[in-house]
Length: 127
Image (cartoon, rainbow, N blue to C red):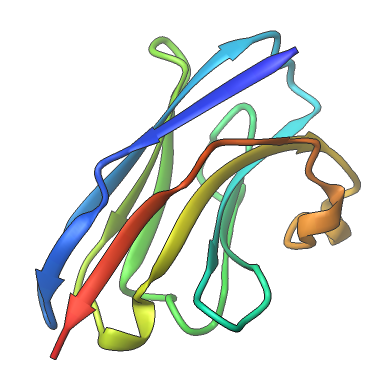
């Protein structure tokens, strides 16, 4: 069983930055992907960024809308996943969720492939 707890959300003005944290507990082996998803009111949950369990450079993927602005990283010693969000825009406003699961590489951005989810943390960006 895997437990995920997010923190670090909040309110910020456009152009600002936030860092989200996800503390993971339980057994996560090298087959796991971990990722950040977000869901705005009235919209479907979408993949933002994912990383493989090892967390090596080159093992990350991003939604086109956040490329160059967001960075996903993982501290395996602390079992913590991060999402550094810079140059935030009002359209980034959403509930952000941490997720973990085992899947094929080509399915890594698909929310239905993830078995474990955190409770979410709200990010609000004002113009």
